[in-house]
Image 1 (cartoon, helix red, strand yellow):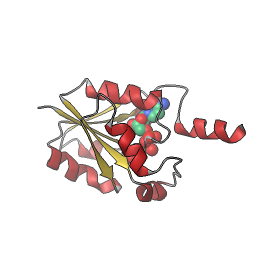
Image 2 (cartoon, protein in one colour; image 1 turned 90 degrees about the vertical axis):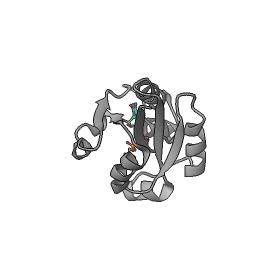
Image 3 (cartoon, rainbow, N blue to C red; image 1 turned 30 degrees about the horizontal axis):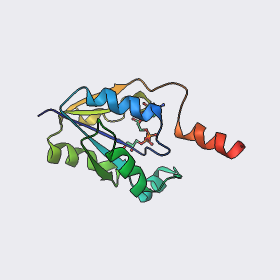
Image 4 (cartoon, rainbow, N blue to C red; image 1 turned 180 degrees about the vertical axis):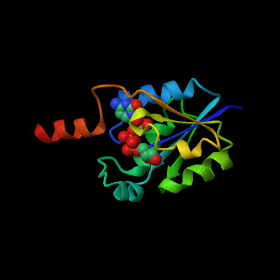
Length: 129
Ligand code: C2G
């Protein structure tokens, strides 16, 4: 069983999130997604519109997602890779290089982001309305 692991906030879930999850899912047999908790997001300086419980429920119900775990801190990835026996850690390439120190634990890949959409631009557009 090839396990792919990724992490994110997934606020205001949009096509860029979906395209990434679909591409990652196609790389293995199951895709596990770490969804950032509200508390962890506060440390990232990222206020979210949608609370963690709803973000996690939305992601958990995406057809290509096998399961969701909470992301509580930056340092949990290595533990999750071992615990879940993850073969691949995949992120969008805005994170390129940031998780290379985990290459001893699993394959680490960065996929091109979907251009033209982000939770931030959606929020800014909503504010301007
Ligand atoms: N993404 C993408 N295309 C977009 C927007 C986002 O491919 N247009 C990808 C990002 O590169 C990321 C994932 O979707 O891999 C989730 O994006 P965010 O919800 O913005 O997550 P982020 O705040 O980057 O948190 O420990 C890692 C962090 O939790 C990642």
